Image 1 (tube, rainbow, N blue to C red):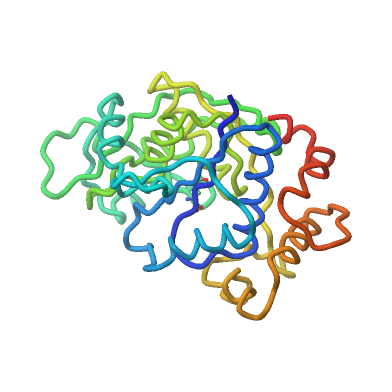
Image 2: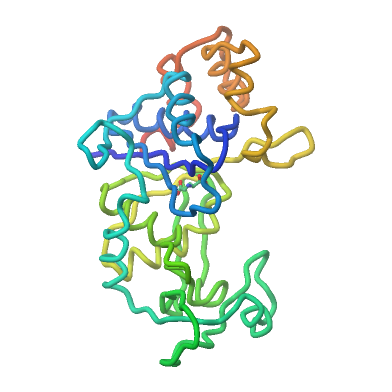
Length: 293
Ligand code: GLU
């Protein structure tokens, strides 16, 4: 059974790039007659913006994208919300080999060899430490193994996570479960079979696959779609209000025009404003490998 999802973080207004990724994930689920699940990733409370979650739901409905599953704690139909699912992440963490780490950012930087891209490898300073003078983060003991996977869009990816990022944090020292663990636990719990998301998350995928293996859970297939960029090639950011759906809607843009423009940004030949479901044929013809799931 095909199960896809869209998992936005309510940290700001949805922009055209988020909308295009949501549209593609929705099309993939619908083309495969599968379920489409919406999950709000609101664990990083420092970045969450009040009202952003409601705005995302509104924007998705406005575009014509619907979802099939999700209930809140009072049993109402609603997306899954990560802040209400913390005990699930704690239970998953129990099944991993982990250790407490009290290193400060400065200490990590000092101990690091050359940073890998923008990522700094953790050298394992706290692996064997038992006494910590301050609050600890929880790190996952990453095995020294190469991870290989074929992304449905980007092709073959290989990475030895121990060599690139080392033992990574699954719970921050302020008690917040980190994205990598929460995402894997949720995708496993929700039996997601296909993850279609922005290419900025390709660098997280090997880490997530290492977690799936350690947890003995089947991993989904991954599809990382190119990010929408501005004229200068800079990726859109949620703070870029000019290209937020809300701003565009308030300036009079109609949702069908928006859907047409998003489709055209993918190079699809769409002559008139349309609904998302009108794009199923062109999606299946233009993205055959992605659409067959
Ligand atoms: N919450 C992440 C974001 O908004 C997406 C995570 C995912 O799709 O795995 O960028």
